Length: 279
Ligand code: NAD
Image (cartoon, rainbow, N blue to C red; front, top):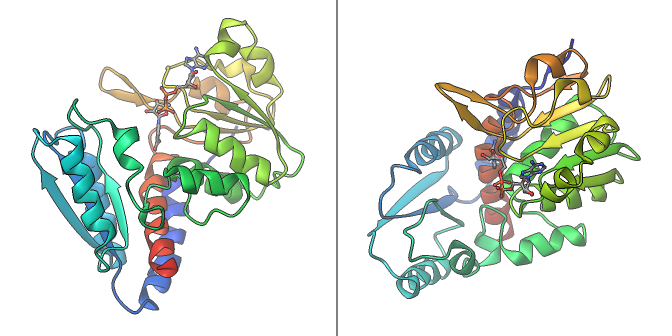
C-alpha cells in the first residue's frame, strides 16, 4: 500500500522557511494581483492567495479592472506596476475577459516581477539551469518528489501531458536532475502507446484533465505517482489516475485533492520572495 504524498505538510515546511526569509528583508514584499471583469472563476484562488500572503507577512494588493478593458489598457496598467518600485511581484488572475489574450499580455510583466514564473525569459532560464523563479505547478511537483527522498539521477520518469504550464517546463526541471524523461501526450494515446510508457515509469507524473485516464494496473510496483489532474465528477474531485487500484501498487501517491494543489500557492509566494531578493 502506497504512502500518501500530501502537499500540506511540505507547504508548511516551505512556509516556515519563507517566513524566516521575509523577516530578513528590508521591507514587507508586495504581490500585485490583477483581476479583470467577472471574478467568479478566480474568487477561490484569490481568497487562498490572500490568506497565504497574510500568514507569511506578504502584502497582497488586489487590483480589480473592469470587464470592458482592452489589451492596450491592460498592458499600460501592467507597465505601471512594473515601474512601481514598491511592488515586487505581479500575478494575472484567470479567466480574463474574452477580448484579452493572456499569452500576449502576460509577456509584458517584467521578468523579475513574474510571480507565476511563466514569462518566456524565466522559462528560457530553465533550459540553462539558471532559473530562480519557477512556474508554480512544476515547482510543486519537484518539491513533492524531493519529499520522498528519492534521487532523480538516472530514474525513468514519465510525464503525461505536455502543456506550457505543467508538462513542458516540468520535463526540463527533471532533465536538470539527470532523470531519463519521457513526455507523453494526446499523440502518444492516439498511437496506442500510453500504457506501454506508463508501465515503465519509476516516477509517473500525470497532468491531463481526464478522470481514470491512467489505469491502476498500469502502475509499476513501487513507483512514485504524482497526479496533477483535477476533474469534477458530480460533487467529487478526482485526479487522472485510478487512485484505489494505483495505491495498491505504488510506493508513494498524491491524493486528489490534497496533493499538488496545496503547494502551488506556496510556490507563488516563494517566487515573490525570490523576486524581492533579486530586486
Ligand atoms: P492542458 O489542457 O493545457 O493540456 C493537457 C495535456 O494532456 C496536453 O499535453 C494533451 O496532449 C494531453 N492529453 C489530452 N488527452 C490525452 C490523452 N487521452 N492521453 C494522453 N495525453 C492527453 O492541461 P493543463 O492546463 O496542463 O492541465 C492538466 C490538468 O492538470 C487539468 O486537470 C488541470 O486542472 C490540472 N492542473 C492542476 C494544477 C494544480 O495546482 N493541482 C495546476 C495546473 C493544472
